[in-house]
Length: 475
Image (cartoon, rainbow, N blue to C red; front, side, top):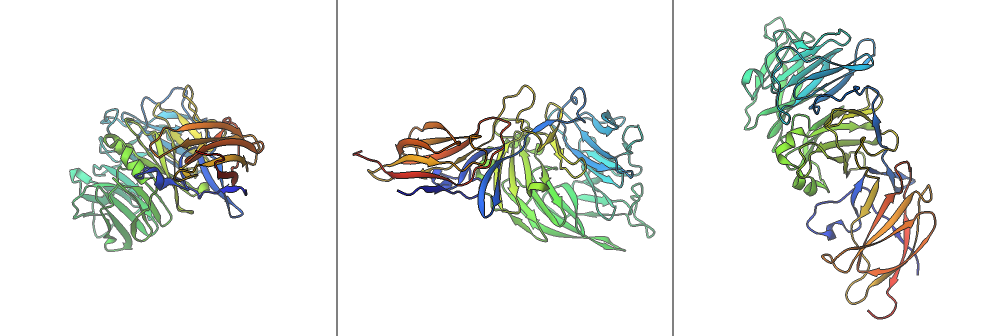
């Protein structure tokens, strides 16, 4: 009897109508990603996280609802983060409160910040407050209202140095931009490049972002592309997608000429045109998201791993607890616990930084710790969907398996067996990855699970092999 390789493709399949839809695929995982080495797909643990040196001595007063990082003209890194009641900025080695005067706060679960930078000036807008704010890094003062700016629900800055304000002056279908590189000039004349446009749309303006050649504007139902065309019109607007509205103001990720976002029941991308992404975990994500708190969804980029992370509140959770992860290079989906309310990628600080709902800042993809202080740890694991090992009156027997693990002994293997799809599951294991192991168990369906033995373990799970055959004796 020859060994049968346990060779599964990368990515997860979750939430389909039956277990059979996950056959031959992974169906569940935490803190795991797939790599390809010499044409062989292998499992690797994600690195963990640690409290950032920029985290305040005491946490922020509430969960952040938006964050942005940039560098000033002296190449000093800064970030801003806002809660429903305050705005903060990195200043020197710590974090200062820069909340503007007469700030209109939201409630604990209402309100979203959108943020960007115009050169070295930080730009922010809290949709409940409505004012377009600016912050001079290193100036030591609070954020102030951008002179002459309209009220808005969201802001962003284009590569051409136009500050955009969306849903201006109480009109949820109008947007405006300042004169080029002149954030205090908003009234259009023949001598400047300020402007404004309405949209003819059933939905309402939600957010925007710069993209190569112009800007993208998302609504609750669609997408618009604004191409930079110069004088006299400055920007030309065209509809770029229908039935592709965004689920929240921060549920987008844009880099280069590509954009990805989370809609109300699908994920989408824009690369010159809009398309819905095929998603093998979509049924599970959209079937379990807490829709009452979907406005808290946010996204960020992890370029070192070619991943877009969409954080969302799952089940009855009122804060983000999980992330749907899209690998745009290999076109597969992943999923993991992720208890973070806001954050940004590693472009400015050299590390992905994210904020917990308790108001602490964490550096991610560092070390091997998988829990915040005082919380239970979830160690890396991956589990396959059911594999058929017998049909009819004959069952199959697992006699032995041969591990393929780089750091031998770092991973335990479990087998979850059933007699039928709806039958009670029973588990055998753990079996060490240090050497081949005898199993001697029978069933008609089996799922294989790999679990890290300890948080400090780095491992690589390749193609393991199992010895399967007809059950000896009568059934």
